[in-house]
Amino acid sequence: MITRQLFQVLASATLLTLTACNGVAAVHPLSPEAAQVRVEEGDPPDGAIALGVIQVSDGQGCDFTGDRGTKAGATALLKEAAVQRGANFVKVTQVTEPYSGHDCYHREFKIAGLSYRLAGAPVLAGAPVLAGAPVLAGAPVLAASAAVPTQAPAAVCTPICSPGYACEGGVCLPLCNPACGSGQVCRADRVCVPVTTTP
Image 1 (cartoon, rainbow, N blue to C red):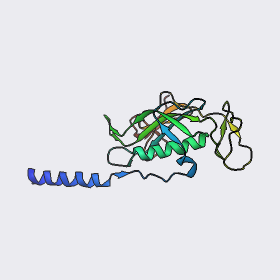
Image 2 (tube, one colour):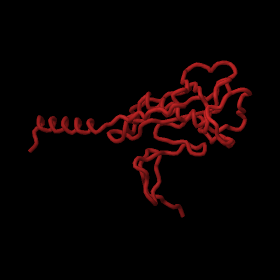
Image 3 (cartoon, rainbow, N blue to C red):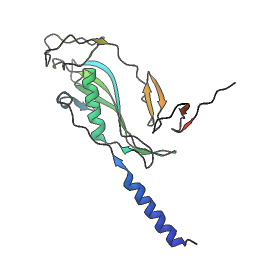
């Protein structure tokens, strides 16, 4: 028979073991272009060209699985996303830190913002130029390259998706970690369940 004292010791040891499994998401080094991106809470300087909404999520998992996201990691991802958009300034509009929900401890650190290209700033080579966002006359290009293709902005979710959901084609879809297998669907509580067909 397990005594109450022994039970408490075992429970504490189990909790410590699970806690030790918790990781922190690694912060990836920035590319030279991303290192030049300004991330601020205020408005950009006059003359900046708006390029659209950017949202990123650092870390993943729920409860004792996955890696906990950080502000530094999310900011690095935000800067890299800005470069892909052709932006060099991001005004932060929303920050969602890891939090304890009714179903689990959500480990993602999310940042959303509005991206801009500052007036007279260099256009980063390889960055797409979005429709409706012309290059300013006299703005230098940092490296010689072929013409940059114009692409339509990706559909975004407004408001941004809650932790545990990802924006795909303008729709917030639940994420399951690990991903669901064939014949399964990710339920709103992030649990994989068999696909059922209604007669």
